[in-house]
Structures are given as C-alpha cells and as structure tokens.
Amino acid sequence: MLQPKSRGARWLNVVLGNVKRAISGTYHAVRQAKYARRYLAEAAYRFNRRFRLEQMLPRLATALMRCTPCPESVLRMASNFHD
Image 1 (cartoon, rainbow, N blue to C red):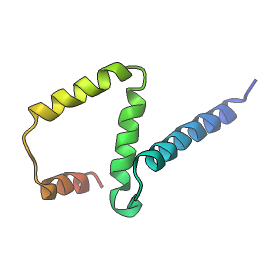
Image 2: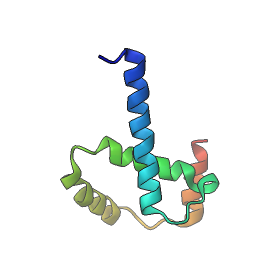
Image 3: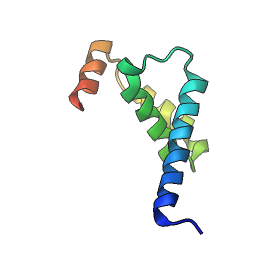
C-alpha cells in the first residue's frame, strides 16, 4: 500500500504528465513564456470535466455563440489581471 505522501506525488506526476502530453500533442509551436497560463487553464478545464466528455463540445459551442466578439487586447488585459 502506498503511503499518503507517495500517493500525492504519484497523482501530481500523473497530472503533470497529462498536461505535458496535451500541450505537446495539440500545439506544435508553444510559446510557453507568453501563453503558459492559457495552456494550463485549458488543461485544468479539460481535467475538471474529464468525466463529462460528451457534454464538453456542446457546452463550449453554446458559450461561444452567446459571447460577444472580443479584441485580443481585451483578452490580454483579462489575462494580465490575474497575475
């Protein structure tokens, strides 16, 4: 039986491995210094909804259709707000 610390370390290793695999499998040229927070946010979104995969695409499509267009400068401002 694994000790509590080693179970936590193993779980962390699984999560980090999944994030790295998702980034390297999806994005071919990753500018980590510039967009790392966004890549991690996407990985967290997918991880938190991993048991409801069939709902992910319809929910995302609904959210995209309901939101208004937003210029890139505003998106960057929102990203910098959470530093």
